[in-house]
Amino acid sequence: MTVGADSGTVKGRQQAQVPDDGVMPHNKGVTGRRLTASTPRHCSAWSPPGAAEAGHDAWAMNVAIVSINNGKHYLWDSNCDGWHLAISENLGVIQERVPEGSSEIRHLHNKAEQFFYVLSGMASLEAAGTLHVIQPNEGFYVPAGLAHTISNEHEAGPGFLLISTPPGYGDRENA
Image (tube, rainbow, N blue to C red; front, top):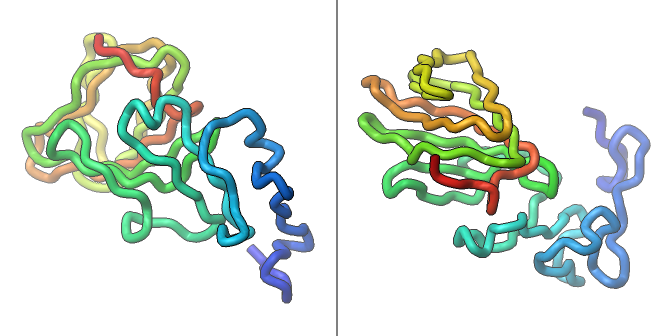
């Protein structure tokens, strides 16, 4: 990607300017904190639906390189790690890690489609009663409404990306 001489230009396109009311046009009507004069002008503040109920605060996603070193970290199912790498009204990208012998509660999402992509180790993903072992550089698509669970039944704990559209907050029910 080519960045122009002025840091607000990428390949000749101007960076979006924050309106006076602090709400980006694509975020009108979405709950979350408002951008202020102290908010970097390349950030969009947004809190996904159901995030507050799930214990997640609103945060600003920078248009920048992200990793587990600077992504918002959280623990799930008591001992599994997750890092938010990107979040918007329509997309959630999370890097997660599941220690040996751990698993999540079997559940489904009524609206969110999910794609699990294993970066390292092996993951066991049960979907619709069938167990799938996913190797590094392999992925598994879970359509909305399909009950599933991911677990680590192997020595090498999986590191994986979880891509959801829309994000699954507030759209999870135990199955």
